[in-house]
Image (cartoon, rainbow, N blue to C red; front, top):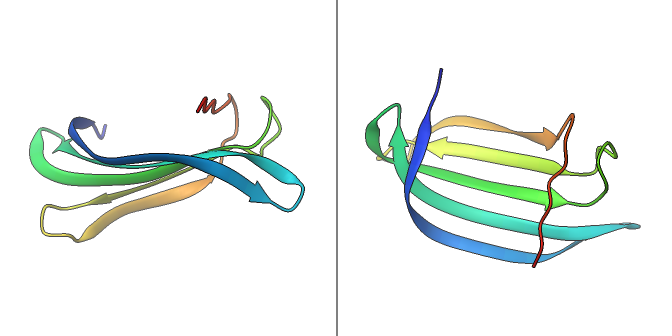
Length: 88
């Protein structure tokens, strides 16, 4: 089990999202925290709210960096279930 616990928000922004006929909102964020209780890791992510539940238009992207800046995890794509709701 991998556990990331945020200790501080470095940046956070909400902006309109549009790709062709699909539109919605995107949130981008960067936080610092502890990965498996080891401090100093950086998590960078974005989430897109571009459709209703089950539309496969909502997406999530995450990357985790070591305290020295090395990328150790990266994943992203449409969510399989549920819904991302961004309310600016």
